[in-house]
Length: 46
Image (cartoon, rainbow, N blue to C red):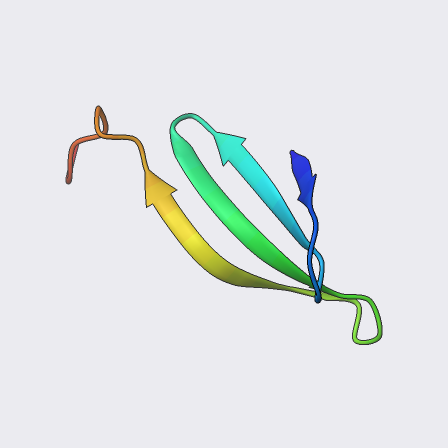
């Protein structure tokens, strides 16, 4: 997990080849997915 600068702030989370960028909304206490990236070695349906 890595904090990314910006307004609004966001978090970059990577787990098992899946990378998700989450936008942080402190006022609503909510995380919203901004972007999802799959590692090229992950196969669809595998």
